[in-house]
Image (tube, rainbow, N blue to C red):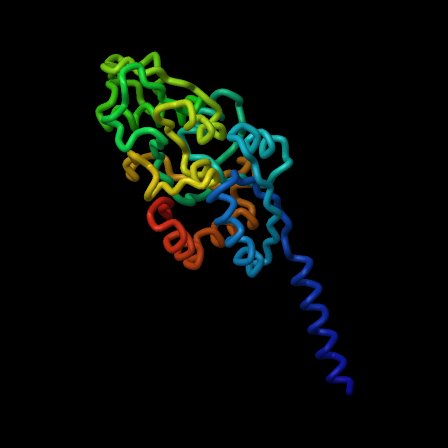
Length: 260
């Protein structure tokens, strides 16, 4: 009887210790594939003793501000060129700790079947933030629609367009609003998360797609002070679990590509 009580007590102590070691964190994600994938990561992280509360955002500005303010422990929504621009512009002390996936940006249209069909003085909607707007212009340049000034790097603006044979008009809009612009613009260059959220399929609806090779893999980002925290390590391990890679590959069939 004493041995039985001792065993039960030991098990109870172990259970309490396990519960005490669990970590609760808040992770900010943008709507679309970021949120969908993180929903799969949550139970994997729980196996490691990490309880994740997901917070969804519909823009690209608030997740870094919320992280810097301490309202989040991590965010997962951005690539490195965007993070670098945000740090330069706003002075955030943030650090990437792992890669997630890359989503080739696409050109979409309700009027055209290819970029070659763009009319004279056609309207092209692009994101209004420097990195994603620049990314859209680089896509157009890569497809031969425009020519950009030499040496513009990853953040060209419409002012850097040196050859615009069709005299295209660039409409700079909030990235989340771009799917709605399809009714008015001839073409919209849309980030994959917002395209998917709007019911567009990059594999079948995009009339042009960005080269998947590039600097635009998305990141897991934390405050620099937390980069070596145990929970940060657990978060990366959970995201890089083989089950998550399989989920991405099977669900998105090439429109979202694992970067780990």
